[in-house]
Every structure is written in C-alpha cells, then in structure tokens.
Amino acid sequence: MADTHRTAHPQVPHAAANGLLDRRALLGQGVVFAGAAAASVTGIASAAAEPLKVDPWSTTIGAPVTTYSLPSHFESKVIRTIGDNSRPGTQQARTPHQDLDGIITPAALHFVVARAGAPDIDPGKHRLLIHGMVKQPLIFSLNDLMRYPMESHIRFIECGGNSAPMWSKTPIQASVQALHGLLSCSEWTGIRLSTLLDEAGVDPKASWIIAEGADGVTMNRSIPVAKAMDDAMIVFYQNGERIHPWNGYPMRLLVPGYEGNMNVKWLRRLKLTGAPVMAINESRQYTLLLESGKAWRFYYPEEVKSFITRPSPTMTMPAPGYYEISGLAWSGHGRIEKVEVSADGGKSWALAALQAPVLPKALTRFRMPWNWSGQPVVLQSRATDEGGNVQPTRERLMAERGEPRNTPNVAAFPMNHVNCISSWGIDAKGAVSHVYV
Amino acid sequence: MSMFRTLAAACALALMSGAAWAADAPKFGQPITEQDAAAWDISIAPDGKGLPAGSGTPAQGAVIYAQKCAACHGEKGEGGTGPRLFGGIGTLKAPQQPVQTVGSYWPYATMVFDFVRRAMPWDRPKSLTNDEVYASVAYILSLNGLIKDGDVLDKDSIMKVQMPNRDGFIDLYPAKY
Image (cartoon, rainbow over all chains, first blue to last red; front, side, top):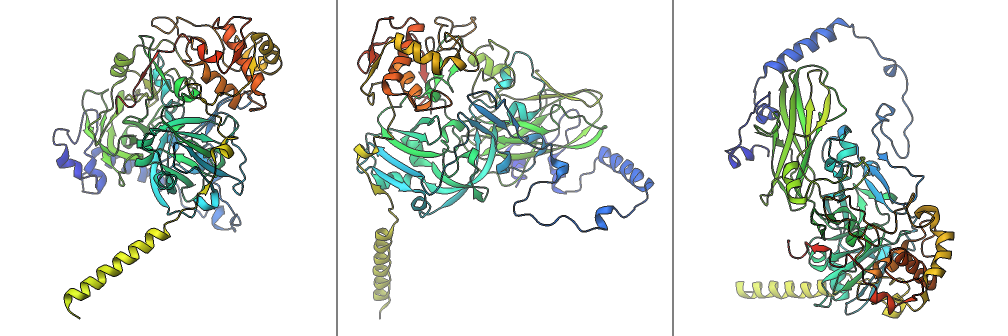
C-alpha cells in the first residue's frame, strides 16, 4: 500500500537530513539502522539486570466484566479537554490526538462544539421535516428513517475554527489537543440524504437546503443542494453504536469534507430554498475577515492538512536513538496522495509511509522512521491531496489573508480554515515545543 | 426452448423484478401541509420572508434587555460573559483591531431577529413573544445608532434598516468551488 508512492513520487527522496530514514524500513524489508541497534542493545542490558518475578495481577482474579467498558485507569489522563462550562454560550471539547493512534476517534473522545448543551432528545418523539421548494412536504419518524437502506463511511469532521491558535503572533505552547483537537474521524452509518430529497421531489429551482437542529439554539446552516445530492447523509451510528448525545443523538447531518458546523447535529428540519438563509453561523461566525476589511463567506471545504502527533509539543524525548514519527493527514477534497516529513525546518523532505486504508475525506495515518542524533531539530509534515492541493506554509497563508491582528488564547477563533504546516522544535534536552520557522 | 427464448424469458423476468423493486422502494415520508409545518418554520431570510406580525420600540426593548439580556451582555450591551452588542463600525480594515458586533459586522437586521427569536435568552431560548423580539432587536439596533429612539420596529421597518457591513462579504461558494 505505502509502497505505491515509491514510483508515484520519484522526485521526493526516501530519506532526508537530521536522521529521517527510508520509510520502507517500516515494511520489514530488512533495512538496518545503527541507532535502532544501539537502542535495543541498551534495552536488553537494562531488562536483564532486573530479575523476573510473578506480578500480583497474575496471582489474583481480575475485575468482573462490566456492561459498558472504560479504558484502564492507567489511561485516565487520555480525555477531552473542555472549556469553562460555567459560562453561557459555546462549549468545546477537544480530542487528545497526542495519545491516540490509528485513524478512528473513540466516540467518547470525539470533539464537540455546541451552543446550548446536548439536548435530551426522546428518539420515539424525534421527527424530520422536509419542506419548502418540494413537490410534497414530508415528515418522518426516526423509526421510519432507519428503515431506509443504510451504508457506512469513515469520514473526518473538523471544526472550521480548528487550528485557529496557529494564527497567534507568537507560537502558543500547548499540546496538539489544544492546537488541532477540534478534529475527529469516525465510521458513520446512515442513509443518503438524496433518497429522502428524491422522495419529497425537489423543485429544480431550489439551490439551497437550510438544515436545522432540535437543540436549544436551533442551530441552522444553508447547504448547497448540489452537495446534499452528492454525498451528504443522515447518520444514526458512530463507530458502530448510536451517536453519542454530544455528537447529535439520535441523528445528525453528515456533509463530508465540509466544515464541522455544517454537519448539523440533532437534525430536525430541512427546508429547500432559492437562497441561503444567512444564519449567524454562516454570515457572522465561520467568516474570515481579511486585511481589506472584507470577509470571506461560505468557505466550505476543510483544506488539505497534516500534523505530527508523536513527538509533539509538551512531550520530551527520553534519549537519542530510533523513533517512529507518527501523524495525521486529511483533505476535504478527497484522498491524501502523499505526506512528506522534514527534520530541518522544511529544507529537506522525505516521503512518509501512508498506513492503509487511505480513504477520501478521512484521516490518514502516516509514519516515518527516524534516528535522532540528539541535536536540535525542527520537525514538520506537509500533505498533498489527490487533487494536487499542497498544505501551505504559515507565511503563505498570512500573505493571502493578512497578518494576524491579535494574539488569541487557545480557545479563541481569530481565523477559520487554518491549514498551514505545524513546526515542532526539539532542543538538545529532548523537549518538544511549538515553533514558527 | 431455444437459446433465444431462454434469454428472452430471463430478460423479461429481470424486467419484472426490476419493476417490482421500484414499486417496493421505501417511501416512508408522511405528507404534511406547509401550514402544519409552520410551527417549526422559524427561518427568516434577508428578503424578509418569514417575518411575523408584531412590533416593538427601543424603549420597550430596554426594559426587556435589563431583565433578560444584561446579565450576559452587560448593563448597556458592552459585553460580559456574552459578546458585546454595539460599536466597532469602521474598525474592520487593517491595521485596526477589528471589533465585530451586530452593528459593525452583521450584514442584515433580519439575522438579528432570527437569532434572538431562535436562541435567546441563552438559558430560555424561544421564550420571548414576537413583540418582545422586535423590541429587543430595536434596542440593540438603537445602541448602534442604526435606528432612532422613537422608531417602531416591525416586519416592514426592519427591512429598511441600513446595516453598515451589508456588502462586506465575498462569497466563495459557488464562485470558488
């Protein structure tokens, strides 16, 4: 799988400065690293120094099985970070990507942005209304909706404001959870929106759908009909179980690749119209104010992006030697084509291995073997999607949109759709920090 | 049976089962009239469609504001745990610090009515009558100098409010993708 890139990108080398190794080593092809050999010799020596004994958990009966399991208490720090819930208004929870691997986000760790809490919706009473510019307005019970043919797709959802801390004038020292945690990826199961729209009979002059939730603020967004008919879904299941309340129970809209806010949770109404409704979340929030004083509006796709999850800021490298650099890449336009990694702040790049499956509009895990000499380095990743879109540098993004005019804290949203390259500096002591290059 | 007839029979069977499938395709939507849907239809577009009857003045709105809004948005709309509601007109262009409020940034007065009616007050959304929503919106617009203290806001006069940032947006859809 990963090997397809060997011929696809002959111009990108297989190794680069500061110890980036050929990714084909990860495929068990017998590449030997001096650093790895040295590290394992040290490891063997220290393990042998301590005599083996039978641990207490091997001599007692373990905990009885529970009806719904939680991770080990040793993992109790792997949790979402949340904002100040005592204040009115928007609440957030961020995904701890620094502690996760693979591409699926556990439902309990999925990011959340919600304006009025999670409504306690009785599934027996929840209904969906389709009306406006249709031949026949229709109303559906949840039970009826769940009788339509279902399908499952692995898709990311990313808040339009994710990575906004990258817009700070000075690099904010925080984990990837704080910097990039408004991003998650799940297997979603549900029905195609086009099936229901065809049943209602969409007026050919209708070009927008106003999608609205049943929560307290009755959050609404205008979605282009073309997108709704293409790959939008109404989903009921998240990673095999019913969607958790914070993520939209009993059902939500899935608009693959488009900014998170358009994936309306607790969906209750779809109104076909000839123009966008200009909701607060499309004509105030989720707009991008430029230097000219004008603002971009209706910026829908989450652009190609990646970041390294391990090592990442707030971590410390224990010693020089062999490490696997691991990270996430994704694009709202389709599949990830390649990810390059640099250990010298972007001067030289090497191809990372992409772990299968590489799916459209889904997180893709990349890996890169690395022998750290112990010298200071700057790690970066740069993703390219199948449409040829390349993740930009921070400088390029600022040149396009104008210099930041304020220095936010990590919870602020001074800019949306920030998809620039992240840089992690590692000093001679192994401390990893967020740097601008 | 000749090969041809076998094939013809197979095709006929396929056609029949196709037709049967189409007839059996799930259609579970229950018809509803737009009249019956109206209780949920709270969308108000910039063209004013959906604006209800009712009216209110800034003075009436000030009373409601003090009771139901000031706790979050500040005594006079200056902001608190909730966002600031006025000012910032003319601050959007660099190098100024942008102050994005209802007055300086929101492009349509109808948006304010729609949002207050569906989502405010934060702890009791949809508890205001239409008159109370018109009055609250009138108060916020008057704080921004966009209507006069004596003006009455209703479904006709709200359409005449000139929002300063009406033309402040560049729509990337459908132009860019």
